[in-house]
Image 1 (spheres, rainbow, N blue to C red):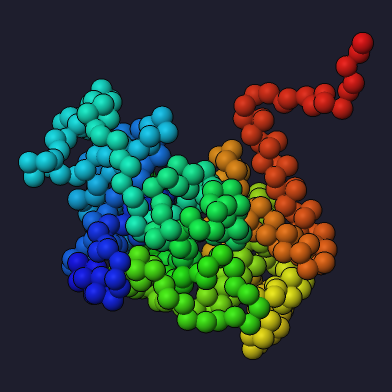
Image 2: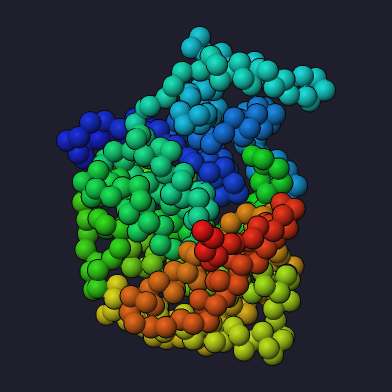
Length: 414
């Protein structure tokens, strides 16, 4: 815990506990938690599970996270658990008070005793411990709901790191979860380019080494035009940033907010093209290539996206913006990515097939909203967004076995 000691000496505020909470145990959350646990001197880690069913899966996996690389599983244990049950968080530490590990609730045949799951929850204590460092790895559309469940445990001294696709979540959090600027936590944003594929709950395959780009955000969450000043970051922000950049498997680097924003916008542009088109055409990424009609749609989408990005106030004065975000360069990047992931099914298409909400409103929807602020009409991005939402709704209704009738336009007879 050398990082905690160093940062405590740099500030007059109370000593940090060093504990890191992680909310969202999909591919990214599992990889980050596992990477932190793999450190020579790992910080205390608490995994936040949003329902008892997920806790049952955790017990079935024998309280461990696994990363599979080249066919070999690397297993890490020792994680403390918080489980959300009836809007209350319950603490289930890895170690018993006497220093022993908890007994297995999975028998020799690999079957889970569900009564033991409920017994664990009955015997656990409520956990209202304040959270210093929170890593959020849920999808963009789930962020507000996820943060509402822990908002009472966050303070103005806390740091929240958002690791997700899409943009606009910070503004939404400020509006719906932390409307009082004086009670907001500090924000960090991050992008992960590692290749990750889910095998089963709490077990992920690491298919390709990438990088993790991190940056604290200025107060308020959005850069102002031409502003790039050094801020006096909170102790929890310094600690989290230092811990992650010194965690080898993450290959993490710290960037300025403006530099991170540009990486985010490049990734956003790719997602705005590949994700929705694979949904509407029900195809793999590579099938978008070598098709004149689809290429025309991609070009038109990217013209709108490029126009909005190049006009963003927070990027004015940054050298090379017009060439970096030109429609032609973005198209070349999209073609390269579709080629590289030709046999992949996009995450958005997977969400639609599972009947889940997509991130479209934080991708093309973000471009549409920023365009409206700037007086730029993004008709094609708006059309694509509505069609994806419409298709998702149709499939959800079909899977539910009923198509509701909207009679709200009919007046009630006297």
